[in-house]
Structure formats: structure tokens, C-alpha cells
Length: 233
Image (cartoon, rainbow, N blue to C red):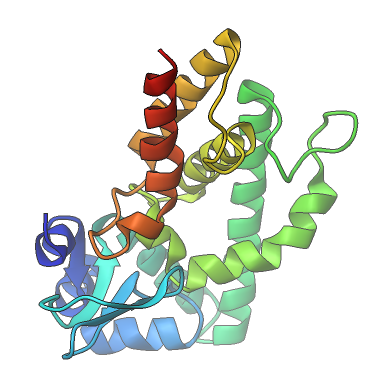
């Protein structure tokens, strides 16, 4: 699959995305520039240079120029418009409200994931309990990635905080268990756990475009690790 086909199957250009949100492209741009809605996952120029917050600039000849948004992220634009209206057009107040709402829902989803599936690397204390202080320390980065379009690029269905956390938690657990895809030997119980996490992560994460796949978490944590498991059999 080429980059163009990948984008057209899973993303919308700015005009089409704005239309899907029920607004014009100018309003979409204004919401983004005021820090109220996420930036596009990809920006591609006329020379075929594809830029993203995750991967930086990648040469991708033939890729269609434009700003490309995840089809499943229209909800964030609706939420931004609602917040702006609720605060009489005050973008700073709306941004604070959006950030607080995102933080609360993201934190709740993390707590639920911890309770159901066990500790999430990076958010657990020495006793194995969920560590909200670690979340507080990390939240500025999480919020920045949200606004920069990261989750639209790497989460298959970034429609809400719970879907984002499901992918991020699966990735964190798989990264820890596989030493970021470099581990090549697993005991019997570990193999079952790795296979379960791979299956979950495969569903929750984007396939990534051909231009970036070799550098992606999907290759590192699914293809490479699955190959190691097969070679062990």
C-alpha cells in the first residue's frame, strides 16, 4: 500500500475533515491555532515532504499535499467549539476547561486500566499502586502530544480519552515486557502475555504509512517481536 492510498483510506484532508465536523476550513484552522483542537496528523508539502510531530520530516515522493486528519477525531473539534461557546469566545478559558476535562477523563481511564489489567509502566509506585504523581509529571507532555496530532497519527480510533489510553497502556506494557522490541527469549507464561498484548496493540494502533513504518512502534513491537516468538518455536 502506498502513502496516498494509506492517507485516503484512514484520513481526511483539511477541507473534507472540516466538512465532516460541520464547519469551514478557516474555522478549523482558527481552533487549531488557538490551541483548542488537535493539529493534523500529517502535513505534506508540494515536494512530497511529509511532516508529523512524531517522526519529523520524511521524504515521501508522490504523497498528496495537504493537511491530513484522522477520520475518527471529529469529536475533539465539536468539544472545542462547545467550550469556546460556553466561555463566550474566551480562548484561554476554553483551553483551560478543555485541558481539565481531558486530564480528568485520561486519568480515570488510566486508573481503570490499572485496576483491570494491572500496572502501567510509568504510572506505578514501588508498592504496585497507581501513581497519580507520575501522571501529573507526565501530563504536560500528554497534552502537548494531543494538541500536536500525535494520537490522530498513532491511535486507530482516537475518538476519546479511553481509546487513547487503551492504546498507550498496551504499548507501555508491551514495551516494558519486550525491552522495547529487542528481547528475543520468553518463558512460557511470558509468551502468552506477549501474544495477548500484541493482538491488543495490533487492533488499537494505526498501521502507519509505508514512509514511516520502519521507524514505527508497530514494526518494533509487533513484527519484530512476533518474529522472535516464531523463531523460538
